[in-house]
Image (tube, rainbow, N blue to C red):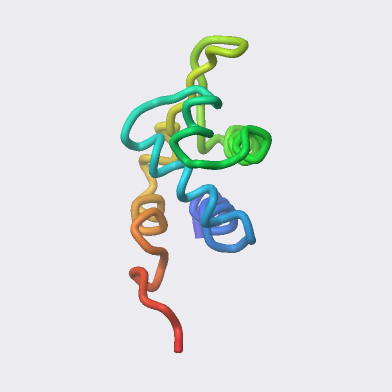
Length: 100
């Protein structure tokens, strides 16, 4: 398995924070936002959003433009280029079906 695919699987399905990260990425798919905008749109605490965004940025899933408070985040080309990214964003490897 490609290292980026492995990383995406771990970040989005393999950890407890995966659903939150998918939620944030879904919002960023629609339009780039800064942390405050993302926090309000997701209905999550600012520090929670900052933690997940930093983790995604550290792993090259998110990129940013600008600096300071107005820094805007968007999904990286490296993540978007992965077929696995779309699959994980649309319900995971099981197509959103729950296991029995």
